[in-house]
Length: 150
Image (cartoon, rainbow, N blue to C red; front, side, top):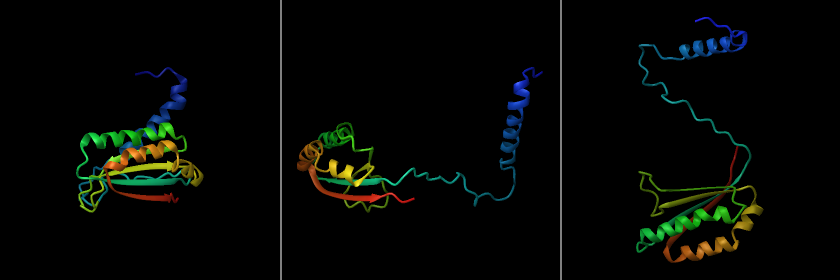
C-alpha cells in the first residue's frame, strides 16, 4: 500500500507506530506463573472538589407491599427534579453477602455542594411530602452525612 498523504506520513503514521509498538510490549507472552499479576488495572479516583454526601438507608416494615416500596422509590427519585440543591442522586438495593445490613434494604445517596444546600433540602416541602408518603411503610432509617476527602 502506497501512502500518498504527506500529513498522514509526517503526523499520524509515527503515532500509530508508537501505539502498535507499545501495545505489543505490554502483551503477556511470558510462560511464568501469572497468578500473582493483577488481571485488571487499579481504578483511579479523581475528586473534583469536596462534596457533602447524604446517605439514607431504609428498613421497611414486614407488611409493606412491593407496590408500596415502588411508590417510595419513585417518590425519592423525583426529589432531584423538584429540589435543585441536590447535585446528584443514586440509589440501590442491598446485595451484600455478609448479612450485616440489619434489615436495611435500600440505600439512597445524595450529593450537595454545601451545608447550606442541605439545609434547604431538609425542610423543603417536597422532602417533607416524601417523608409523609414514606412514614407508614418505614420500620427504621439510618442517615449518615459526610464531606468527601481527597
